[in-house]
Length: 346
View 1 (cartoon, rainbow, N blue to C red):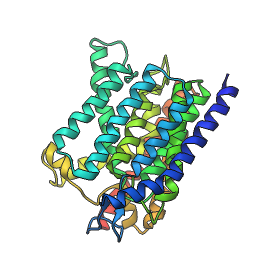
View 2: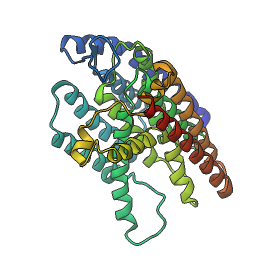
View 3: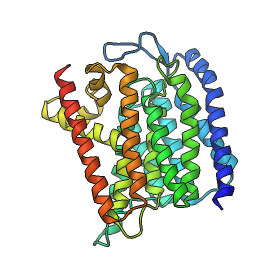
């Protein structure tokens, strides 16, 4: 069966890559004409106004690839429709600056479609009282948290796009090994779309993803984590695989949130949403002398190494899971040390 699907996966990748690669210059032209630009300031590294709306090219390529495939499940439809809402909200926000309340309502609606219509929720909770309610609540926080975390990683040319590729490849590898075709379809469509866009987004980027694009990629990856069937018997595997694949953006968001609260930079949810700083992992690597490209490549390899651990976990027993998760914790402690040193260099 997967020999047949192997050809289909290749064609889906080729379609999404080609559409993204060739559509991006057109989207860039439109963004310039509409003056949807990201202007330089003290917080941003780029020197000239740069077009936003790159997420449109990524989304169209992803959608064309999925529609061409003509094989759908309710879970796939839920993620596809929910991510469409996320993309539209982000694009409008890039263009017209939507109020926070409208953006929040849109994100809740998108998550609700994935959870209730698509039927995708987390699956690592044992059979406890109120199990279903807990799964729904955690799934909302998961979708919102990963989407926000991925948006935060879009601070250096090529970083969020490349992480989208690496995370997608890890999800796809597990999908292929475990014969989860719908997980494979969504993963490969996203990989191709991001890969086609990366050529235009690599430093010096000629176009940015914008909030629409980075939120879209993050939401799709969060949805893939809910869609996948990771283990029927081991909750540690079901929890560990998504966390390892998406460990870098999740850890970055958790660390900077704790750091900002500790340092008094944010005191409530509104301040947390509005606060913009240069204290993310990639910023601190740059402060340590890696340079922008060096920081991006460092994070690529870090994410890939944790993703490989996730792939290994999907094929191992309980003791091996504990060892690989321990290894990941040690790596994250090393990251913490790097971020602390990077803060001292600011």
